[in-house]
Image 1 (cartoon, rainbow over the protein chains, first blue to last red):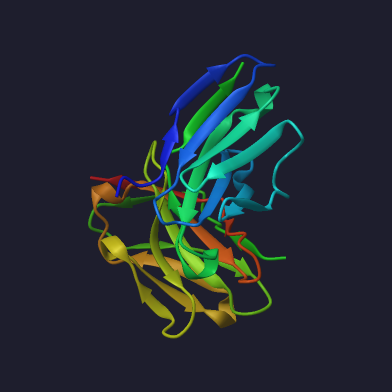
Image 2 (image 1 turned 120 degrees about the vertical axis):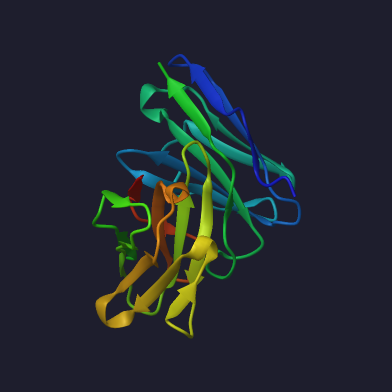
Length: 115
Length: 113
């Protein structure tokens, strides 16, 4: 299995631009999670999906952030407009079940820099 | 609310020495506990997990962790550290009611030759 695949690995953009991060979960995994990692706040859960349906988006920082999962093999996290404080590493993870009885499989992350 | 504390931000050990990374959790009932490792530029990889039963759990790469309810701790140990173990280690907890895995702030491990 190729694991969770995220693209791009690095993204540099200017403030105000739209940014789209992409994720392909492991085939057969029906849970997908988006996390953000920063030095100041550590790893934060932004949103998670079950069977392509958003279940909990309470971690999404504000309306500038949106996430979609149009099918079982693809998800996007969009920031519009982007701001310098959005600079972070964004991870996608997938699992076969609820977190407490199955481990998360993480992608290698997208390092976003907003100037 | 559940939370995780990793009191050591940075630890340096010599290769071949033993290692213990501390983790304390806050949760009213028995939590589900995890240790993950993150190598530079990589995502997190699961080392081991505790759900119930034997309080000493074995993981990959020769790591083990012990759940101590009386101390609300889940410390990670390895008897002999290898240079390839240099990475950042995260403890995480889930109370079971939600899918919100709460991570600690991480401990960065450096290994001296």
